[in-house]
Image (cartoon, rainbow, N blue to C red):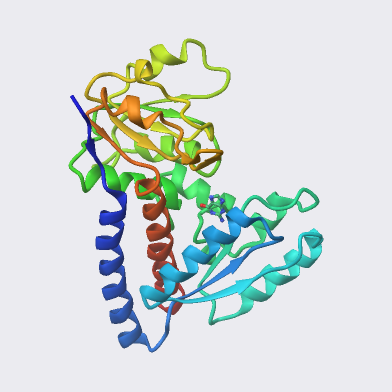
Length: 287
Ligand code: GUN
């Protein structure tokens, strides 16, 4: 059996059209244009590509964007001063600080400095706390994109055994929290695996839905997947052979029931949810 492909690019296109319509309505009603300020410290080529793609997507959805590119040797205090300026700017509705930041910068202080109502990444502790309590202001972009991929492809999470491989603050941890919440988008039985998990393959083989965000190319092999499982690959690894996910796609697709490709799976959905959050932020600040 060969898995069917969950097409993130197509779904992202459809949701971006919805967001563009909602944005046009918002702008017509309020006279305000939602605006995202992206902060990219240093010149990491990968981050430059991500930020450029985010800006292009904003433009197509009718969302304004600003780009700030402080140099790699920027001090924490200087970055905090920039965040403060963006917090106070009424034209800026969303602030995104691209991670990772250079080593000398105190990442925690910077993320805590972003005004929670402009925190379109949902990285501020107040927003993380609200998510844990089931009363979110913004949903974190990658986990939200994955929920949309599942539910708009009729993959039910209620009662499902979901295994999340990876426990990062950006993906694994919030993904697990969202899936275990009460309600139609959650109600899953969630297991989180990481580098210290014993008998990993045994655990992953129990998954009806396997979500992989570990940052290691082709880490999940066919033997680790239950026949018919839904496999969501969050990985974006640059290898000598090109871009590779965290899942050994060629072999796993012979076992899984449905699978996301890399590229064209989770990636486009992440950016789409950032657009959604920027519109939400503009609504919150224009009420
Ligand atoms: N770096 C990798 N993923 C992300 C993300 O979702 N948001 C930001 N700001 N930086 C990232």
